[in-house]
Image (cartoon, rainbow, N blue to C red; front, side, top):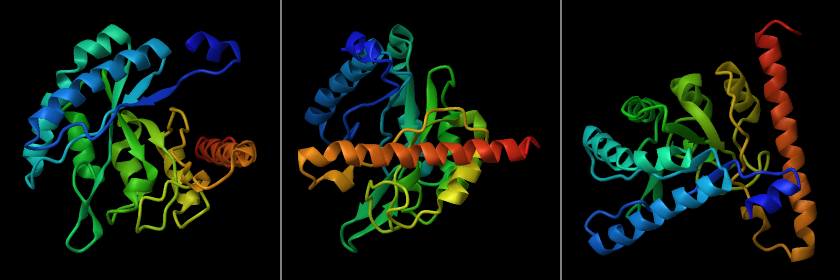
Length: 240
């Protein structure tokens, strides 16, 4: 598959492991999912992906305990990172209060905790995937999170839009996130990674023949935002 894709001048830049990575109190599930996660690292490495996103787990209300347990989980995967020359990307997450039917923070939901998580991990094998949409769901913003993590830790993105209420996974400009501020923050931290969408929910009811047009729109939106980032970097560097 890698050879076929690369023959067209394309490549696999980023992957995503199955999730949730762990369920508290469900030993049967945890045994099965761990093997699937390990296999996904192997496959992503074979395909040539630079990063594979593996979700952290919310274990309890104590932040320090959560960070320590996640660090232990991630560090156990370092041998696979070495073997397949790939980094694991930790992602900012959210939870849901089912009694109130609303989204709430859980693990790495705010920049300070996310940065604390990354400070516990070896940057040779781990990076931060900032999910732009998730950041807006828990009372913070993506620009705040990007600046808190900074150039040092932000290695990849999940780019999508929402209304600050639900995880919509739609293209930028479909909802309410501030893309001028987001692109400015990416420029401010001199972001060097790829601009990876996770924004295909808008196509869920489209007939197959509409897909090429929909993907072209997504591509054009992405290119426009990348240009904005580069233009803002040039202004920061005094080139314009």
